Amino acid sequence: MEEIKDQAYFKELAHRLMFDLSDEEALDIVKEFKTLCSQLELLEAIDTTGVEPMVYPFEAPTVYLRDDEEEHVISQEEALSNAQKVVQGHFSVPKVVK
Image 1: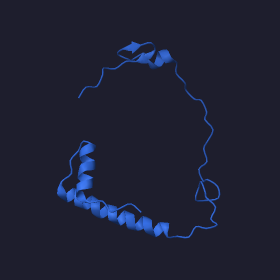
Image 2: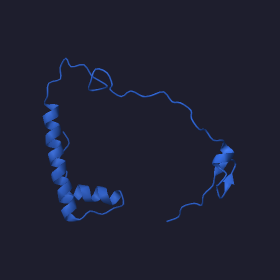
Image 3: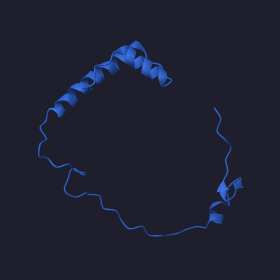
Image 4: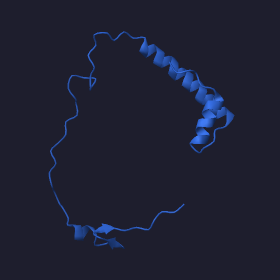
């Protein structure tokens, strides 16, 4: 199992991801991480010998998809008719700058 991480580990990780954590936030994450690790240890302790892996938790998926039916289809020209700027048959918008 993963070793228990401390506040400094999560603060350094946050810094590398370009955001900062307060000491209180880092402590909360440490507590949540410890809880998660203990829950994973409980799951790992379950004997799954002889259990066949499954893709779905049920025998068959309960999601039934309908067939696609074309309805009112507009042409490319109609779709681009109100565009302020079109480049090579595509909408062209200004670059987003921070």
